[in-house]
Length: 141
Image 1 (cartoon, rainbow, N blue to C red):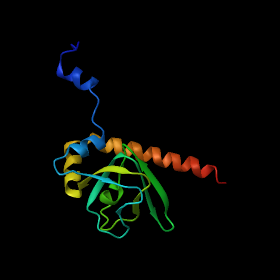
Image 2: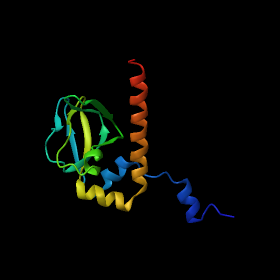
Image 3: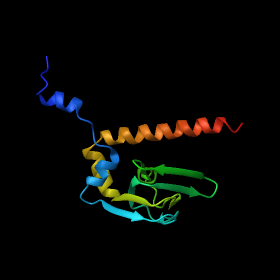
Image 4: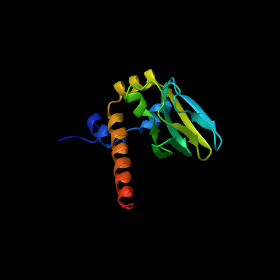
C-alpha cells in the first residue's frame, strides 16, 4: 500500500508541464511578441526552430494546401522538424497580436529526449486536429 507522502504518489498526482511550458522554460528559448499581420516565417525559408504560442492566433498557409490556425497553448511546425524538411512548407502570419516562444531545432530534439511524454501531448493534439478536419470535411459533401 502506498502512502501519500511517497514520491510515486506525488508524481501520480502532479500535473505534467505542457509542451508550451517545457519549451518556454528551456535555456535556449527566445520570447517574442509581434503585432497583427506580422510574418513569423515564410514558406521556403530554412526550418530552424519550433514555435510555441503563449497568446494570440497564427495562421499557416500555402497555395493549394489550405489554412491551419493555431492558438494559445499550441506548438507548431514540429511537422517540418520531424519530417527533416529543409524549408518551411507554409507561411506563418499573426492574425492577432501574438506572444510566442521560438526554440532552435537541436534544442527541441534535446527537449524531446529529456521529456518523451511531450511527444504524446503533441501527437494527441495532432490527432484532435485531424479529427476536426475530417468532421469539417463531412459538411462539404
